[in-house]
Length: 266
Length: 239
Image (cartoon, rainbow over all chains, first blue to last red; front, side, top):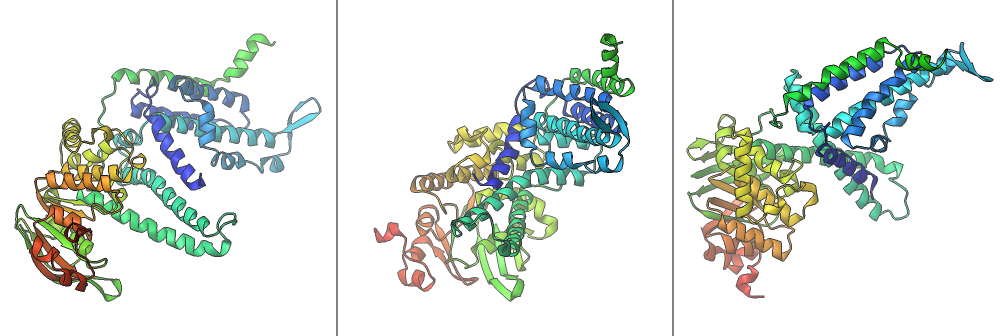
């Protein structure tokens, strides 16, 4: 399958995931959004050398994945394009911070290596949590939550339209690359000299399509405010939020793996 | 109901899509808007719906087609766009169908109930929970018509409703259009469709109205059609 079409279908399949049923899917979107924000803020606040304490934070998204029935591997598969970028974060740290922190046998681990791994873990954990939120919450519900916390209408509409439009844009790219490759047999990808006109055409076609879509929306009464889902969620779904926030805070304040380890090692 | 006077649409570079068009459409009419490619059919529809800037005047139910009147006009004016993909922008058919009514203040539950009725009426209830990108071209066209019927418009504009449909789907769409109880304006160069669904016809060529009249007066006039880049409908020639 064309890579653009594959990407478009990947995005749509995330939307399919968000419509499954599980204890996590059934929770109030706003509660999930708030917890995700708290979780990411907690993860980001860890000291750059506190790799052991940070590692315990993986338990929160892992619990979410287990309860939602979405395999963790799905997250990594869907985010395979973004993950390398996240892993590049802190790549220069080992060269800047060479002081030795500890040794494993003959292998000396510098502060730079530890901070690099910590940064990578922070990125990966944040991605895991964000993906869990998106994969268990339909975009309309998510946007409604953002409006509830007074995110400006224009930003929320932009987010929703971008989310919707990305798939259409990728379909447009797929159609163009397919028709290109049909007339350029044996050519691997799009020739460099064609990139200018290809991108130009893509922009024009996208703008035309966006214009037609927008026309169709305003003809049906769109005035800048999307209606979002009006599902009613049980208030009980808020009960677990203080518990998980407390877990996050405790993990931040106490080095849980070290405490657990001290029970077994003197 | 619709009164168009001196309608002129000019695009960038001075290209005139429509020039001095006068046309009156009465309540209950089924008007076929015919003409070769580039005759100005879509531009006329875009002007009527306020999507394109124009010169001249268009009155719809006594309201002038100007920005401040558009919300009221669009409540009563449905537009089935040529490309269904451009019309269906929500993920599922049902979500697309309730988009309009909910924007106009109908509750979601009520809109869903209405959508179910319309889907049943068009015999496409099976599409309700389907994703727009996973249905066929014919199904998409029927779903697009359903989204417009949800608005309960007095007037519906159909832009090439049967283009790129196979004979079976084409017939399904034609039957659906015939069953719709509203004033209909159908732009197409599928003259068999026009012959089947319209009582009156307006012939456009290069942005100007050439003739407006009864269906048989225009669609059986071989010379008139050929002078304007069209051919007699197959249902008349019997070929």
